Length: 141
Image (cartoon, rainbow, N blue to C red):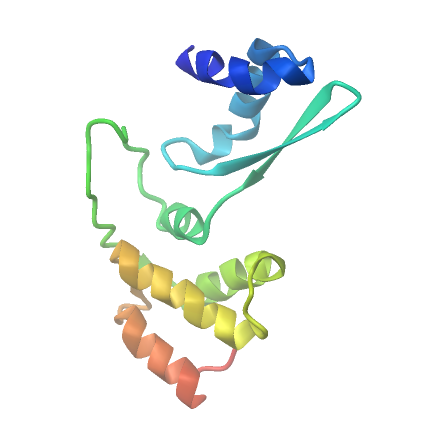
């Protein structure tokens, strides 16, 4: 396991077993197979707990329900699927505590901006069109 080799210098000084930490990370991230996610490692009394904190892009790609890809072989993928606006709202509500946006409406705009960058559509429309509808008040958040 190559991940253990890169983990050892980081967790070794904390008195942790790199192999066990690597296994804990693998268990915590098995639902996110094929996607890049950030893992938060909390150490207390030489016991590590792993918390997965996926990015908005990872959550959107997961909502597209695409099959997992090998990131080393397939590069620069445009995700051309479709997501329901209700799913975008759900993602925005889940990640609202971790954002600097002052309201849900602003955070929905941020999530839609991420949808533009990954290349998917929202309810069959361009995310930019949906952003305009949210800004003008035609779509309620």
